[in-house]
Amino acid sequence: MKRYRDIAGDGGSNILQQVAAQRERVDARLSQIGRVVAVLSGKGGVGKSTLTANLAAAWALQGLAVGVLDADLNGPSMATMLGVRRQTFHLTPEGVAPAVGPLDIRVMSMDGFLPSDGTPVTWDGPSRGTFIWRGTMEMSVLREFVSDTAWGPLDLLVVDLPPGNERLPHLTDIIPTLAGVVVVTIPTEVSQLVVNKTLTVAKTTGVPILGLVENMAGYVCSSCNAVGGLFEGGEVSALAVAHGVPFLGSTPFDGRIARQSDGGVPFVIEHGETPAGRAILAIAESLRSVLGLTSTDSP
Ligand code: ADP
Image 1 (cartoon, helix red, strand yellow):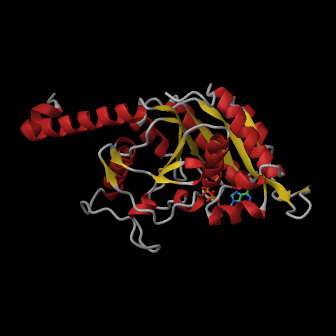
Image 2 (image 1 turned 45 degrees about the vertical axis):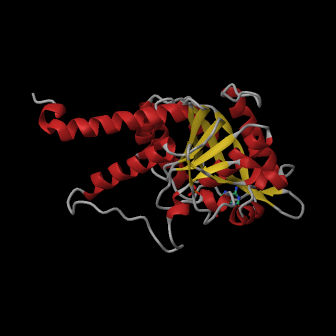
Image 3 (image 1 turned 90 degrees about the vertical axis):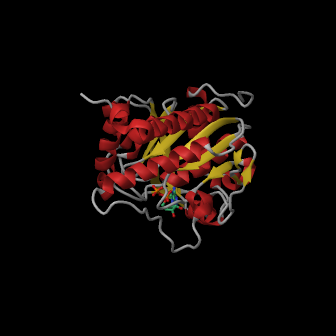
């Protein structure tokens, strides 16, 4: 059997050196970051990005130094939800300075690299094998987002993964020290069927599943804060039990969450006393204790 190095000759060893050097840069950045947590869901539109932004804000409110890595390169929402749209990134001697959102949350997102709202991310590559090529390119970009961003010391880096089940194994390759994943669903059977598979995939990676969150569970009246029914569906807590993972809690639908997200100020910052605000803050608090983080835990 020929080893890659034998086949690739000098050019190959160059590539191997480059990969090794980048791994070292990733390790150096990660040594400054207390914990890395990913938020994911096989299903889109269930509130994964919303939860990411609000968990980040909740942890920042609790005194932690927080960063957010928007791993959804083709549909980046973090810049909008954290109020840093169109903030371009500049180079410093330590690396690329991240955008800075509310409560000093540091954000890296493809949004800052795109020239206009209608510009999609496209990859130049061979006309055949596009799928594989695209996955490889996306991974390289994510690896650079981790290694080349001057995050500074962080207690927590939260990664917003794009919808789907296939990116988590890529992320664990880039960040082998991933502390855990938070999985999100809404109550409907359609969502739970997909998220059932997400939980199975997450288990196969060996990364701790920190728990399952039910979003849009009931509807909150923004005048009186009363909670009424919204979607029908099976008990999300039963799905958590079936997989032997913690059920972290339920967040109701509240129109103010969407408004705050569009306005770039996470809901919990201004509405922590509402049913949805209290639910998210409680989820953040229990995750913080599972992760063993206190506000003075900066590395
Ligand atoms: P995903 O990341 O899963 O694709 P998003 O976080 O982008 O989903 O949420 C989809 C839409 O639903 C967004 O416009 C967001 O503001 C809104 N949204 C999410 N969760 C809630 C909620 N609990 N109450 C009201 N609106 C919500």
